[in-house]
Length: 124
Image 1 (cartoon, rainbow, N blue to C red):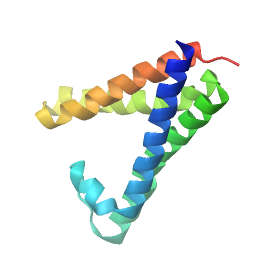
Image 2: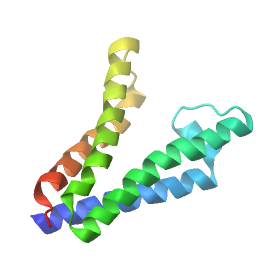
Image 3: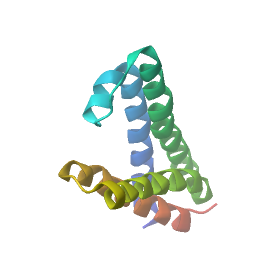
């Protein structure tokens, strides 16, 4: 079971790093896919810094935790994703629901579950 969780955490971490690289290479395209508008160089810089920072940071820490088998390192990415999911739930409560919101919410819920399992099961 530990190997499965470790592998999942590692793959999720790698995906986060790859998403960050994609954001750095094509910030306007990624922002448009996520429903975010970009307004000039400041907007592009913000997408590269904030979005890539979120995905890259959470991904790199998760990947490192999986490689080192250290579940305690997953607390930071767990909190980042849990707060992001909370923001989406808050948006649904305050602004209403759209079908486009379901896939990212489902992905974040799975990430919270996998990272939570990683915190509990990966030791050393």
